[in-house]
Image (cartoon, rainbow, N blue to C red; front, top):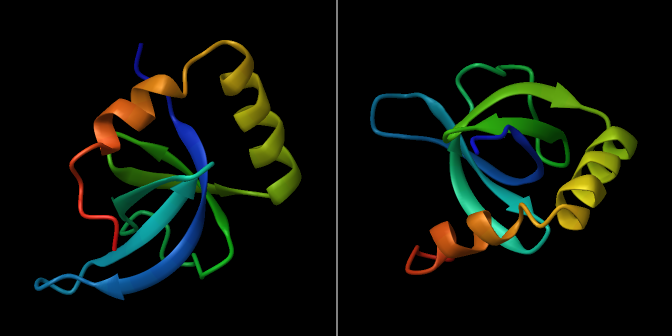
Length: 89
């Protein structure tokens, strides 16, 4: 199943082409994400991420609620498996 998942933006910078990117924490799983679709994003915000792109921002309460649901139904294992072998920077 392909889901959009909330995560907290920990770090932001720009890639070689000038596009915004960030390191996002999905409950302990860290991933590099493209932030081009949410130019208003800043460190500490929560973003909804789908296939490597932040597609919208969401408040912390809503993000934690959704994350709790994902934990309940066991959909977080997929994120952890994908992150194995990635650079944890």
